[in-house]
Image (cartoon, rainbow, N blue to C red; front, side, top):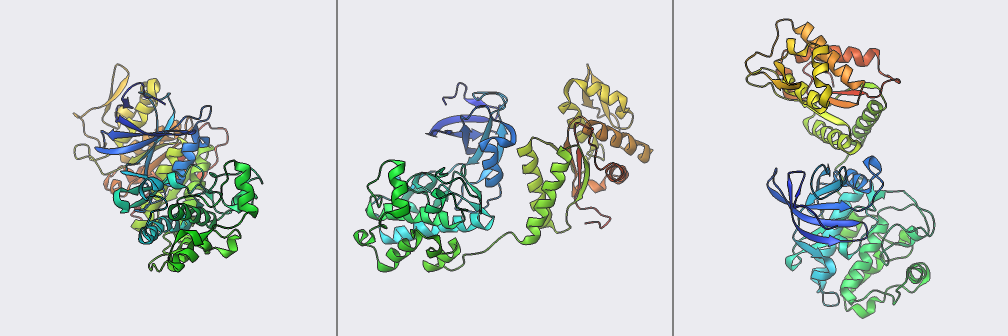
Length: 465
């Protein structure tokens, strides 16, 4: 896909093409907003969009990873202006000056120490990935990037990743030959040991300078993976310990492989592996967020309070932000009061009005919002009026009008309205939240509506968690 214009969405300046494949292209670009170089992954698959698009699914998986050995996914964009078709998703990824493993580590001439260092980097990444319940399923040289001199390793491309325990149809292989595992070929449920098998074959390639079989066609590889002779490690001139390690990884029966990436790291003599960052309580919190957002998308009104623990609240807030982005649900966060207005509500309401386009003026007048907030209209376009104060005398009446406005808009299109921890200093917030709580309680399920509302409270001073 050749760019027809250098600037995407008035933000990303395309600098060069990094790679092309059957599924799409990757560009290096400069992000003018965050002032950093990034990689943009663009899918060329047509006819699909929204949550079903491959890049959407990949982003939903990648955004949960925070590890030095994994390429980070920053955000999911949808093209509005520039070289891509309107609405086309693209992934904004960390830019890493590395190349595929087999282009840096010289297959057949890689020293054992280099192999061990490389294996440790990949296993640390896999340990983190598997701890989230994800299997990469496509561990091959092109998906493991190595920095200059082999000093750093980054796992990338989660386009085929799936949850552990997922199974495909026998013969319908998800992965890349010849690095696919026997259990994937057989359509068995796949777990992290499939990734260990792919790593074992990659280590053999780097050690021997060739693959363990002279196969070319997928059918030949299938026969080799299921019934062929194992890799000939005697020809690799490796230390016995490292040879046994690769032999364990490439065992055809997955029960003969290490049970996990952390166990494989221990076999290499690397301590400090196996730290799982997500506890059962965190998993439960993420599930609650997803269920509440899904209910709102189906027309319900829900209220969700984030936990008092800052770390847990931050994780759920990020889950909600990303999940909303993936599903195309608008997300608004009420922040600290503006110094001039004493409230952030004018800014939040203005954003909502502008997002509704040409109907903003009628909505503003219907709820008499310019009577309770410093808003005005200029040729039908809502604006902030900095000549007026924000906080009205009758807080309850103002809160009622703003609540009615939010509920009115939610009947047309679902959105998330989050009250941030710093917003509680605004005197309008508490009465507004009371109104929204009541609306969510008495009318939780609005089956006839075309939208829905999820109200999220962060740092509720009333002690409700």
